[in-house]
Amino acid sequence: MTQMLPLNDGRSIPQLGFGLWQVPAASTAETTATALRLGYRLVDGAAAYGNDAGQGEGIRASGLPRDDIFVTTKIWNSDQGFDKTLRAAEASLKRLALDHVDLLLIHWPCPGKDLYLDTWRALIRLREEGRARSIGVSNFQEPQLTRIIGETGVTPALNQVEINPRLQQPVLRAFHAKRGIVTQSWTPLGQGHSFDAEPIRAAARRTGRSPAQVILRWHIQIGAAVIPRSTREAGLRENLGLFDFTLTEAEMATIAALDEGQRCGPDPTRFEMD
Image (cartoon, rainbow, N blue to C red; front, side):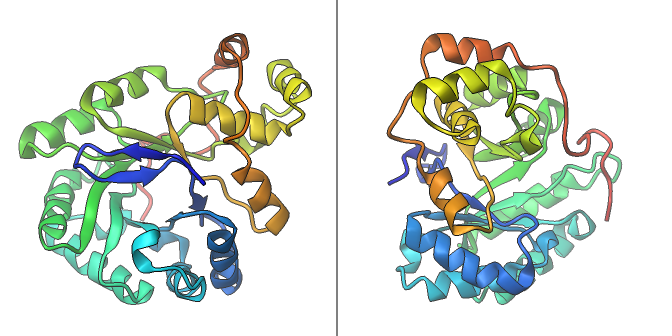
């Protein structure tokens, strides 16, 4: 069973979840249902992934009570703005065939559009209406976080950002910690770029675990939530095996030294794609 992390709105979130980025739409329902039956309790989707109908179908096919499953979706860049966000959220709920999600995020800040503040105000409205139990952001940097908190008085429950051993973002994580914002890691394995790094290999040898499990355990021990993806049942099982071993302080320190600011994804200060 995965651990839970407290959110600053009084709710909680599973520390380990299943990410739906790049899961084929045709197999999303089956993969989601399998993940939930294996023990995952968080399913992270987004309108932009094009598979949210399958996400909802898989949730229903799992046979689990709705309240046992933490469902995340996101507002895409082209849907930013107050009224457009409200319509986009309603469309997402319709595709999911759900009356609410547990977490609704702004997918990217798109600072050039300068609509993220109005979009955040729409998320606040959706939370007040019960359409989203918790609200947060994704790929936001400290200036955008400071602005939306200062303008609305509402602090995001979570910021989902790219974090892996080569991109650890310690300054942003420290800001999150001060504000009670959960850090959630996307592309947590860094596309495998650290699998052959000696600190990872050494920890894998000592623990008898795979490099992927070592890296995911590192995320757990820095206090982040994490949403790895796999379309294979064996991979889904492997990613669940994080809570029965521990990395030593020395191993954590050697992994910390791998940080070099290397992104796999876009730079959020410039990414504006519709």
